[in-house]
Image (tube, rainbow, N blue to C red; front, side, top):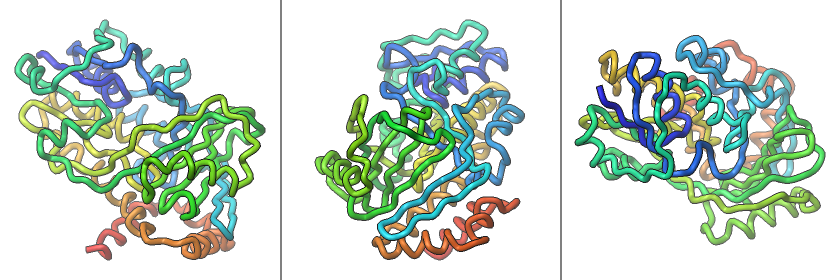
Amino acid sequence: MKIAIIGAGISGLSCAIECEKLGVIPDVYERDHSVGWIWPSISYWPSVFYRNIGDPIEYLKKDHDIDVLPLNECKSIILKSSGQETKIRGRLGYFISRGKGDESEESQLLRQLKKGTAIHYNSLMDFKKLSSEYDYVVVATGRDSEARELKVWEDEGIMRVFGGIALGSFYDETAVLYLNTEYAGAGYARVTPFSPTQAIVGLYDDRHDEFDTERLFAKFLNYEKLNKLEFLFKLKAPPFTTGRVKKFKVGNVLLTGRSAGLTERFLGVGGPEAVMSGVLAARAMINGGDYDEMVRPIQEHIENISAFRKAIEKFDNKDFDRLLSLLGTPGIKQLAYNLPFNFADFIGSILKLIEK
């Protein structure tokens, strides 16, 4: 069996690892010169999003035989709006390093390839051409262009990102999330630490023009009194399109990770889902199985979490203040984050029904 994987990101590498374990050595094509985002970053895997599977690190190891070592456990989150602030404590999830460093998730996955899978770097491949040369082609590019070309992509919006790595004094187990329509629309800004001395400081805006992002980032820093931070670098990332796919497999082409719309649209989390979809794609191709049916529950979970985005799209700052005031009520915040059942999916499914 000949399998081509386009993209050596999280889902592509996870697929390659599982292919090896099932006895097939795939060809992996990566357009960059090495694995990992060109800029370092931190992904947050919130525990409240994963009550359906339990601890996501343990789940990926047990059910998908993939090891991911987090940078840190998140033990507190500070939520700030224009007029409110609340702090939530507990076992709130994990910070995952991304990029080209040795600790990054991509580098960790690369080291789990054991049987000689070839990664063809600096290779920009056309999935249509490969589909005539291979039994299966896995699209793991992190882009939606292939799904659009296959006519299975459904747009939901766009997120614009500006940020960088700042030097300062940070609590490496604490994330700070800012909700303020003056600079982030219905998006958010964040400070997420790499270490006690370095952090990702970013703005994720869904309402303003892309040429406004640098100005809005400066406004965020001034408003939140972060303008004294020293930055190692700042950059404007490419606009982050959001959406879903109607089908995960078209002919012999399988879509995984963000290429399959498996990133929720509330905070932009999709790391565990990228791993899962990559592994399931390998199992579907080699063991046989309906890939669409295998991945559909993951999409359902993504849509449940994304329903929170729809709920806040029309929020103004008074709405965010009221939300944080509610979350800060004694008992409420711990209830939401520490309930033993799948709170986020439950509420999200209700919000979807209301939207209809």
